[in-house]
Length: 451
Image (cartoon, rainbow, N blue to C red):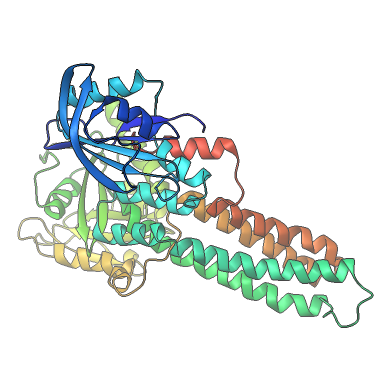
């Protein structure tokens, strides 16, 4: 990280302002070579200066240049930001001039990566920055801000500290058994303290399922046999004609997607091809795709036709979804009923139709109840926010459970210590206290250029 990097930090296109960011030991001196105005190498830190960017005698643009000197910057390096007029040609010309001065084009996320590697932020805060850029709801924004402020990191650090204290006591007893005034960390003493930390991790993981809902929304598939009204229900929920609706069976051959917000949570809905046996190769591919989505969904809306008896396809769908988060929608309740509802006595059932829209509100309310979305409004937003973090937390919890089982089986304390240390290391991976170069490279490649 001894070189100096630059990138455009605003979206390319026509706009009032574009920002080109430069970071590294040569940032100020290099921009100063192109800047006509004050000597940037002599101005105070965190000041803005008016002038022009020039290519020899040619004026490229009228600009404002912000100078921020190490270490009080985002990357902890010298940082210069050039505010020029928006537009692809002008912005690219200034970047081109910078790159001609032995400055390297930054990789995606490299400014944030430098902030992490230089100790300015931890890994959870870095991931929260990317979350804040990509958020689609206000609740997700609040959670990302909590991450940037380090609240999720502090939560993990507190658990690690408790584990570290257990490890320290074990080490003292192993290394200095002759000192009588040191509390002996027997299995009986260690077990309740270990279980307390394990319970705390269990609660964090449980609550973090809410975090994933806040951030990513609820992946919802609408499934059923042809012509039961799946596409109509999708259209009514979205309040737009997203899916084509006809009386012809097999109209929907591939998935149709759309999103709405319920209480500030994204409901990502997928209308699937009607489930039936068919000789049409293309339609069968759609059916297979529909069935494969069942295991990927957070919520499954099974649609049945009120005016038809249950078919073999209906029964197969109900069987495949019996252990899932499922709402059964009996559609077309404005028509005479031929459906045997006794088989649905243990299911969450909503009756609706898409002609008078009766029951659509009830479906939305049932989703709110099923995922406790009303309760999320009242809770804080200190959650683990992605699959990587949650997976590591689960590994840490499993290691503590291994240690607990070892204690119950009277395994020697120094062997139990190995599992406890593994848990401490896994939590360290969440916040970036321990990491591999491959992981860091992969994470920051997901960032946008210039951030």
